[in-house]
Image 1 (cartoon, helix red, strand yellow):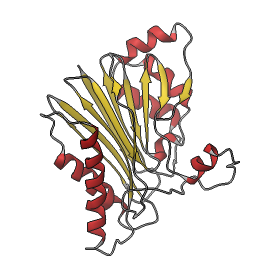
Image 2: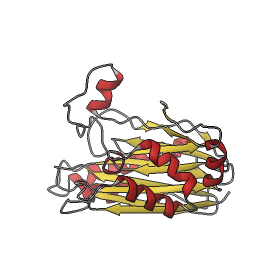
Image 3: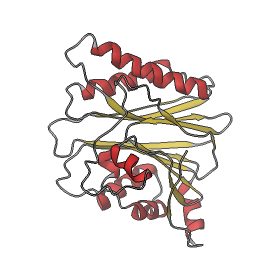
Length: 257
């Protein structure tokens, strides 16, 4: 199945970019990773790079994998950061992570995340948020509490922490021609108009054009945070979106995995 991708990473108004992205596309499998080093704790960029490099070093694009392997990738990334904490002064460095793994032979997609970096799935012209943030705001929202004024950057889980909480893993998704994925950091999704993001898919012909259009329409000048994203297209999502849009199916749906 045809896979095309595009990515972007911007420092915003910050002095450094602690977002790190990476991918590997082999003949039998592929993986895509977005990390966001925890702000306020020195070494965030190092933690993000360690996480991505550890997964890419252990991932083989010429072989199959399964859900157990996906869990091992995340566990090894976390261990790499914890080990490095003991060797440097960055004793509290950490990072969010969101990963997409694709089995190209069986057309299957797996994903995992820790923190508040997100994965969106576009399927049959509809946008699904398939990750639930590991943040205080999201935890309060899920419990039905008012979140006005609550700091949206407070996380209760990230790679590099000693928490006993596990990463979150999605159900296995059977890929179809026209599926599209968007992996992004909170600096990207915080300022997105989600309806606009979905509608842009039927206006472009490549993932690069798609990210460019999203960036121009949603990212305001002077945006304060780093923002990064990877767009992955399976087949021709723009054509599928056009078909379903003609039936007025534009909507945003959050689903829990």
